[in-house]
Image (cartoon, rainbow, N blue to C red; front, side, top):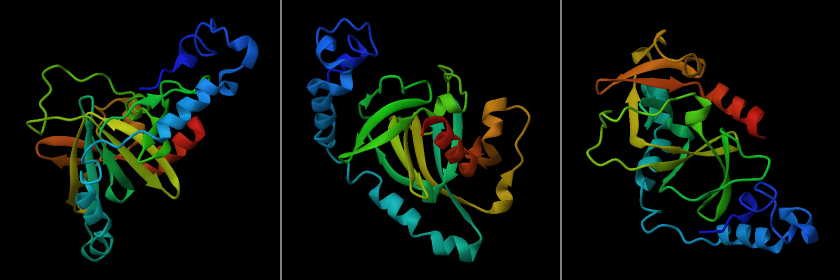
Length: 222
């Protein structure tokens, strides 16, 4: 794991690093440069390329089927105590949790920092913070008997984001008429980004407005 000294004794920390007098800012320091290089060179987790590859490939191949059968394919996942969904076509990668490196004066509660996904540096955000979701109840019932946190990569019109999820189910197909109206019981923040409710396995799944989501991320982060 990279020693992110810039966050502790550097410009984003208490500024006690003796090298600051020489380099003025951490970005000019070779330690900072080496950290970025090592992030790119990290080995991938065992089995990474196999996990979800077939599932995501099949979801991409459903585009024509969706057009002819009038069904909608969504990817369903959980953040805290809320089940959420996005159009399946947006999902590009699902992988194990990786180390996220914060950026001085840029990282905040929504933009976490940079993460290495298959050797490429990607922008990592907290969808949980953006939606204003609270921590899940200890007794929250999970869908799967074994729950793994994952990182998800979504992309739309060249804009790519990575965020962590507490649990991910997979791809689910529904009819448009199965998407219900948004009730007044969900939080105001989540309501803003929700365009409909999907009833699935006894759960109410918030179907997120990807247009608004990607627009907001571009405004708040880029």
